[in-house]
Image 1: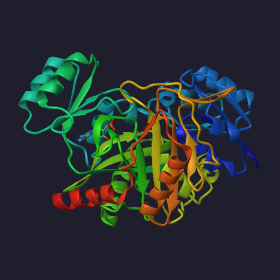
Image 2: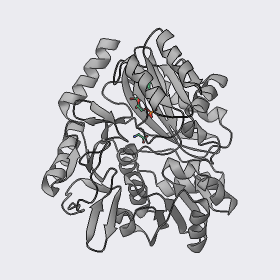
Image 3: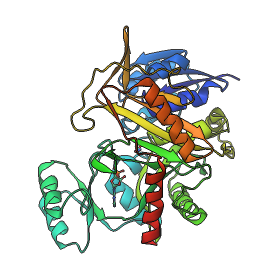
Length: 428
Ligand code: AMP
Ligand code: GLY
């Protein structure tokens, strides 16, 4: 039976979801704040609306007679879009607002881990009183990560001893006017992501991915939503082994066991330390860019996962093509601190060649496709090795041109991948 699926969100991650459903027996409709041309091209309908307005999303879902919905970004989850869709009888693959707190409230997330004995939790304290937080910075024996408790699009964290000094961290705490701040032990190692599909108390995991949060090459500059990412032809990444992967999955299993009724994607962000994986954070959705690594190699029909989740069935076991992927984002000049919007985007699926093109925060107007202030588009190479996948992604960027845009060319290159392996070797 053909399912009518509503996709909520218009970024690169949602374009990857749309592409994954394009060959399924699904009729796709989408809604987002921006008109994403990649999603619009494969959807039967596309509505521009405020996706943090649950009523607007429900009205569109009812208009198109949706059977189920996939909610991509965190902001609609926090706003209760999944709650409203469920209530209206449209199964939302995405957690309700209360369960999305695993992502949207970092204080809740850490207390949840502590209360349920989920392994891998760093030392932490939450503060409402910013002077008390500054005292804690002075007294703590070691470096801390300063994290606003709420959502900041990946841009709110400051790590002492990495990005800032203790004095700069205190200035940040005093001046940034957050209501609540979490201070936690700085974790040292290599970061990786594992995304899992969760429903009916089950977890199905996908290959590990490494994102690159810092804006500039060589892991310099401010944090971003993620500049690009790679995965290997196996479940692990080159700097980790099978035990590391399994330990991280065990942590995610412990979360799923402790969460009652969670549905959607659970995203684990881990730091592989000298003592194994520890938890940087959980998200309640696919990663962006990580979804663009994971969904192109997923051989299982994503629609089968969604319908099994909805129907209370066993989730299918997942199979993946044994291929490596490299994803590179093109972002507006000045992103993330002072981005220039309004550049014309010239890349299209033809000029992308062998690479997969995912449009992100661009806007399709009558006379063409334009950048906004957020990440513009991504190209993904898929090949037997990370090196070959990287070359495919670079080839697409070269052919298409990136005027007015910036790319981290170092992502997925042999030197950077080797430096991750060397880093782990020195820590172990
Ligand atoms: P988040 O918004 O929690 O994803 O944090 C953004 C980035 O800050 C992470 O990807 C890490 O690079 C860094 N970070 C967050 N928490 C810690 C921690 N406890 N120790 C070291 N780095 C961290
Ligand atoms: N790539 C980081 C995130 O999606 O949160």
